[in-house]
Image 1: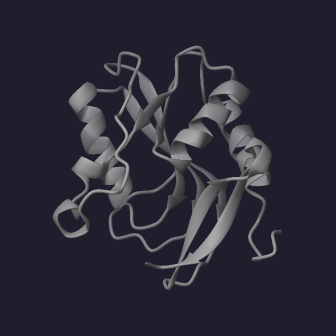
Image 2 (image 1 turned 30 degrees about the vertical axis):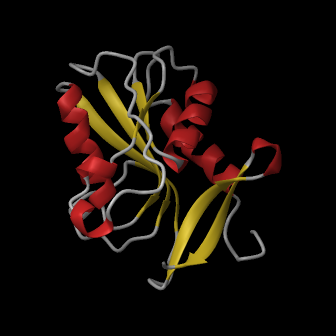
Length: 168
């Protein structure tokens, strides 16, 4: 546990890796949602020995609250360096909450083609769903007050850590 009472992100990543190991093939496509999900996807890609290059999605333009929220400071390009049609995909996010980011990611994915399947991996599931979305692979389920957000950050030395922040 960290000083904020949160589990170690590195331990949760190991849990996720173990859950996913028997469920992936070298041809499974991993796609991380920018930014935390992309960091996780890179680490999972290496740990699981997947041959297909890792993809990333920035769902900023696909969010249903785009008009209310506007753009983030930095919008990264989405990169899917493999054929989506007919491929089994695993979408990776750091924190699963309302499900709206995942809905946006699936909308964007279908612009690239029609996958055979899409499964979801999340380092943390904090509940609070507004859409019927569930992860197949979860590092931990945590009860976080709605006045706080839980963020994944890169620590010094390249490791990952979870931190609690007040909702902005």
